[in-house]
Length: 239
Image 1 (cartoon, one colour):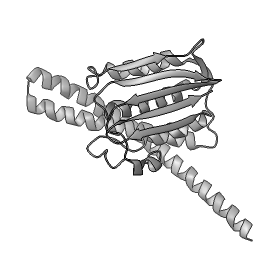
Image 2: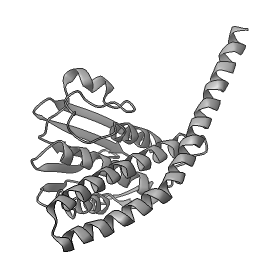
Image 3: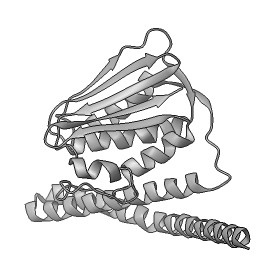
């Protein structure tokens, strides 16, 4: 009887998870159309504010664009989590050049106005081929999320080191930013968790949670070393 109750509880939990994922998936897709319309009109408003040379209008449009981008990122991450959580999800497996993929993500950030003046150094210490078999889209999502955190919470240079340990590719992304308080390290990979010293910075608390989910699906490892007011190093290991 106890076993049957346990099995029933597991089944109910799985059913609730499926319902949650279906709701998130539907809601995210439904929000995409109005968000696209908002982004389009904000672009027109930004262009108009430039022509009118109105500082107050430009300030408003900048703030609206910032909030729109934040909402879009939240939708994207939530949808990605929902997709990965499904029983049927299987990562693709293609040949990806590790260095090219990382450099591409670095360039995406440095080409934006927010990070144009920042420095991100990529060091390739891998002897031989830098090609890995993995899900390219998910790998890029991981690198994007980690780089986003490093650039957001630090004003100094961000360093990306790629090495190989036996058959594993090791990627370390380090910054000298605000770091993570010791008491928060145990929870920093949890869904919607934000470190106590991150107030005042934009964020959803989904970035590192999603990184952990993806790395697990890719059969890799994800570690964090951090010290408050010193900096953070995130290490990714993939075969």
